[in-house]
Image 1 (cartoon, rainbow, N blue to C red):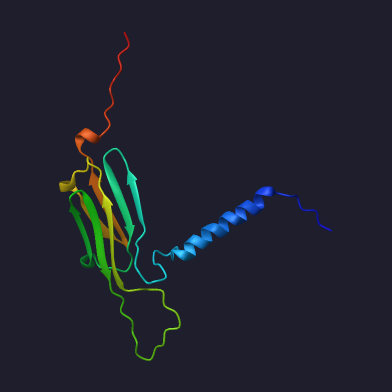
Image 2 (cartoon, rainbow, N blue to C red):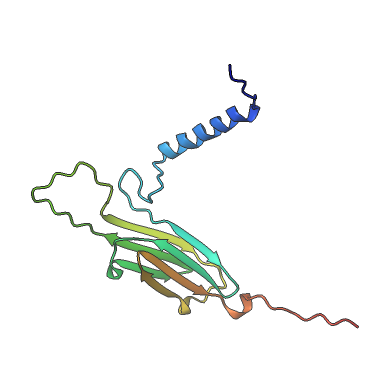
Length: 147
């Protein structure tokens, strides 16, 4: 007979996992960035340093001509249209997770963003957008004099 130590938190962890799973299934979330209804929802990382706010968005399999980046009234909008061509001749798909369609993601920019200096680069399925900060928003180091 094996002796197992009782852990009261084990059942709480299981309940939390089941609860999370219930919401993921209800809202059709998945790790692929594509929900089960076929809508494209690209994943994005937003990082900030002393000079800029940087967006990195995963949009594999697209041409740069199919991606649109617009800033209007302090809102950054990235949209696009993914087209997937499939060779249908003599082929029956058993499973296909690649979807065609359009997407649009919008983000409110901070007031200190210099929208006239925004740059965007698309390479290897990653769209990188750099939004420089205005001089007044950058932290300034002040020397403290001891007397």
